[in-house]
Amino acid sequence: MALMKKTWKDTLTVISALIAVYSSWKYYQAARDNDTPPVKKGIEQLIGNTPLVLIKSLSKATGAEIYAKMELCNPGGSAKDRVAYNVIKEAEEKGILVRGEPGWVFEGTSGSTGISIALLCNALGYRAHISLPDDTSNEKLALLESLGATVNKVKPASIVDPNQYVNAAKRASEELIQRGGKGIFADQFENEANWRIHYGTTGPEIFKQMGGKLDGFVAGCGTGGTIAGVSKFLKERISARVVLADPQGSGFFNRINYGVMYDKVEKEGTRRRHQVDTMVEGVGLNRITRNFEVGEYCVDESIRVPDTQAVKMAKFLSVQDGLFVGSSTAINAVAAVKLAKDLGPGCRIVLIACDSGSRHLSKFWKIAKNVDRDITLNEVME
Image (cartoon, rainbow, N blue to C red; front, side):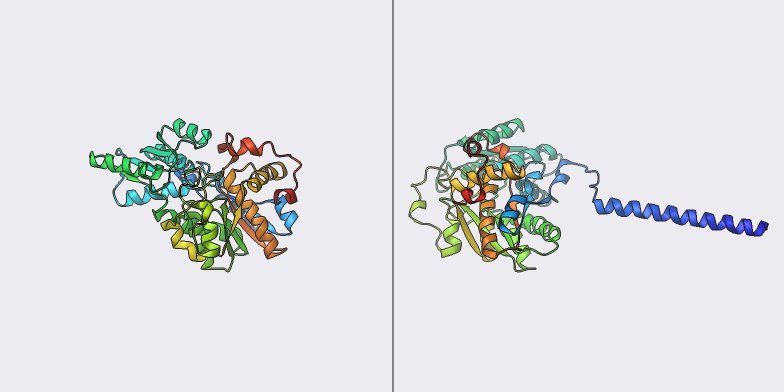
């Protein structure tokens, strides 16, 4: 009898141990499945792995699945965080910038890249010097100044003008280096660190989040880095259709669809603004950058989106989905709807949600807020 009791006790002990092991394993599985993010050791480690969200209103209306890659969830509020960090990292790998030693990052930008650079310079121990058009939105200017960046506002001008904001940034960096200082000109338009980071992170993230199954990808083009890097990654694996959403006045629409960069309304000297004659900031250009050139062969078509459609789409997404987006995201959404109608019901499309509408309150959203909140998608697409 005593032997039977001992055997039963031993059995219970073994069963209890197995239950404990099983419970621990299930807890670990649950934690892993929930993908609880680990503790980060710096703001730079928050960059990337942004969420992908279904845009319910557009999906329901088109019969497609239209998703937004939420790049506005990066710590600096845009996809430019990835580029800024990679530019700095590559400069550090070359020994041009050294952590713990004084150094400057110069850039010419219409806003978002400068904000990302300023944020990361603060986090990594550098200083930011940003040249930008003086008609950039007040929100972006205020952010840059609040982050402690040195801000150089210049008159809007063509790239051929030596005082154009990109040229002004390059000249300022050269002057610092000549005086013996340490610094880099980020050169987001031509620096291939731009497309490489999107090829190495944004593209793989989208591919994994979609389970490798998507029919279309939509992005705008300013520097060309996002659309080049992501489309190169996707095209090497699947046959998704890549669409460049282009604002009015930009030359990419003609370049992709007809092989000619300009038309008469885009001739140098006829536009009122520094890049293209549109209220959309961050995308649109009338020259071929190195970053765009690398991935141009991957872009299947371009869809031109007038400002009127972009403004209405921004209000529609805000009211219908709670997505408060900036102007470049709005044109991507318009292009995604057009692509969905072309590909047909059941297609799966991903667009880039570049930044929040909070950076566009004084310009783009000053107009968008007055759009009727009951606007329909058909009215948006008119």
